[in-house]
Image 1 (cartoon, rainbow, N blue to C red):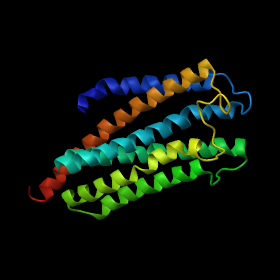
Image 2: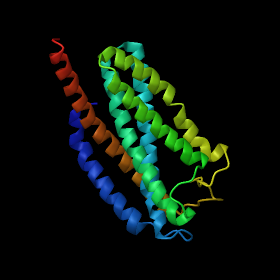
Image 3: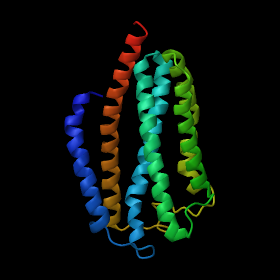
Image 4: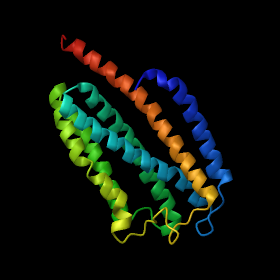
Length: 222
């Protein structure tokens, strides 16, 4: 992705985040059962979505690196993994804040929450693995295999609330968590805003990774 795209993406992301705050805090109606604490939902779900999407990009980057041996795909993979881990951390923290008044606990070893923690640990380990290997091609090869295998945890996490008995609500379900039209609009707007924000950060992170690769090449006498 060209770095010039951020000329358009940065103001678009800023508009999206400001608009999302207005929609989540003012426009969306107060949920009848949970009250105002439910409004964190409009940031919790998009954070989880961006985390999952970022890990999917890492998965694709790993496949493309193993196929082409071009290190640009490895740089894409690690950049997206770092962003995904950050957003997954936000999702876990906001989920805990939401859970405290609703479930009367910060954390429970529910299948969905447990798998979210597993996903977080896997991608933290992915970054730790990269830090342990200095040679770029070898590091990229190991990380690609790890990133491809580790992605299996993401669909498990996503479908956990549909496959197993869990206290985590199914979002698009009239039985458990019904969304009014204004709630749905707010959620979709925030999903779009967070996705644009992901690409803004990805462009900047790739730029940094490219600079790092050039510096590494100079230090190695290449």
